[in-house]
Length: 157
Image (cartoon, rainbow, N blue to C red; front, side, top):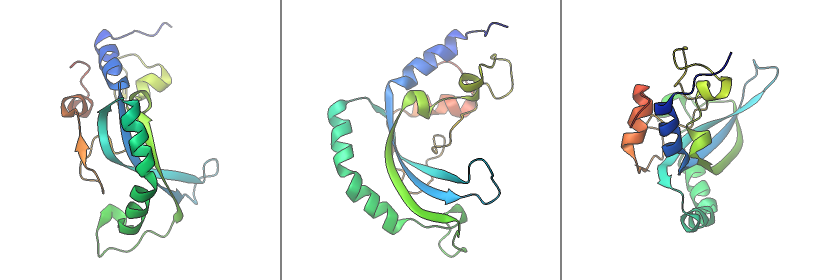
């Protein structure tokens, strides 16, 4: 069966491809998983920045300082509650990454070639905290209109 190509979603995907997003990841162990015993939990720091190689290089030069600050100040509890019980499955591994829009905004429709009327078509495949500004260390969304289209599951800008 040929996949139906939604022109509105294609436009949204093209616009989100032209972005880069800075994320902070912490690795956790999942003792119930056989195939993938480790996973990263991500928090977005900067979202929807225009792709700029100079800006990317400057950010990457700051990774060690930023990572050290985030590692020191991260609240390692469920929901980031200061007085809650600390999460015990944290492995101690952390990383900073720049994720480009085609991966950051990949949907289940993209990954599994779903038609636009199928459930999950616009649901984001990876969780980098794309739709939440309240995760720890979030600083700025450079294109809130783009983000809001994904929150609503809309396909046009």
